[in-house]
Length: 97
Image 1 (cartoon, rainbow, N blue to C red):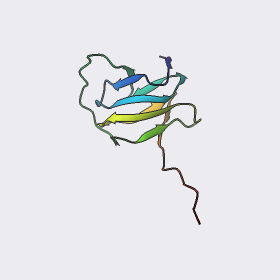
Image 2 (cartoon, rainbow, N blue to C red):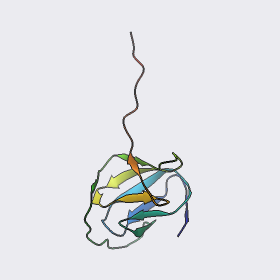
Image 3 (cartoon, rainbow, N blue to C red):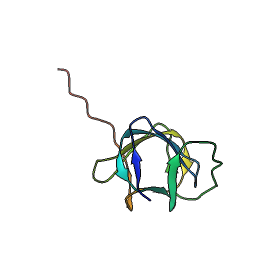
């Protein structure tokens, strides 16, 4: 199911319990452990297995179209349009000689 993500929107992974804030949006299919990621309301997430989704880290889609900030840690594999989202590395700062 494709959803339209907008910057600032809060999301929850109903499988694994991770929560996110959208930092760059778009029209995508976003899943965690094969279950759709939904707009945050009063859902009770189910327990899940998989890699850790780390608090305070940014996750980027393969095409750099969608970016999410994790605001509550959880477990699971985060996918955007069927491709695993990558943990975004730290930005390199310019040197100050």
